[in-house]
Image (cartoon, rainbow, N blue to C red; front, side, top):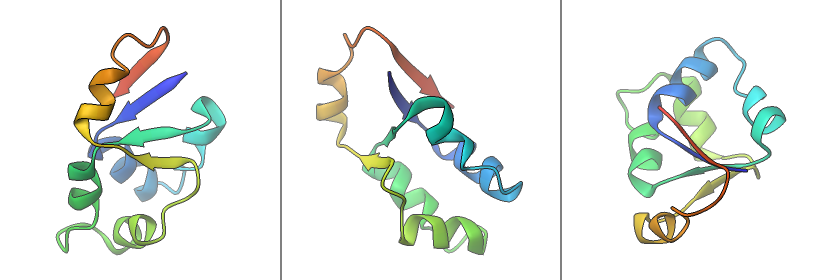
Length: 80
């Protein structure tokens, strides 16, 4: 299953220390580069900045052009 995520789920799950649920549910999660930039923002809590500074193996950054090629992926989910 392909899962594409926005910033919000990461912030919420990191605040409650449960971001580890994402790979358990989906295996891997894809984010666009802009989401990576937003997570690294100095406006974000330290735990969010630390997470994206050293992302886990299950978190994959892909450009939108690459993501659009996956639009016909049979079991794609978007998390916002």
